[in-house]
Amino acid sequence: MTTLLSILAILAFALIVLIPLIERFAPKANPEQQAKLSRWILPLVGISLALALFKSFTS
Image (tube, rainbow, N blue to C red; front, side):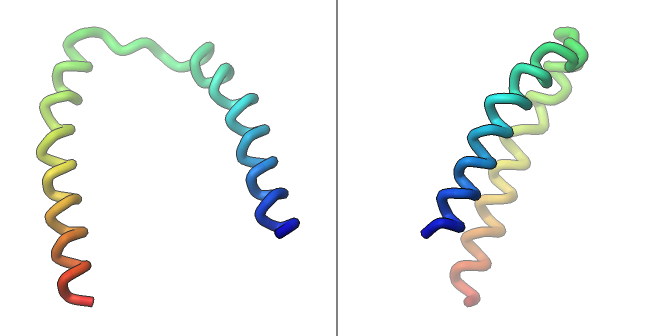
């Protein structure tokens, strides 16, 4: 139980520290880059769901 609590504490600390740092120093994407990325998101999600379904049926 102590291992679980220590892992959760480390994760919470990392989230509290890393998210503000990432938001502050991450480069901003322009609308053209966002459109390119959003075009790929749904097909990749569909492929990953199909692979997960296939894996669950085969094992």
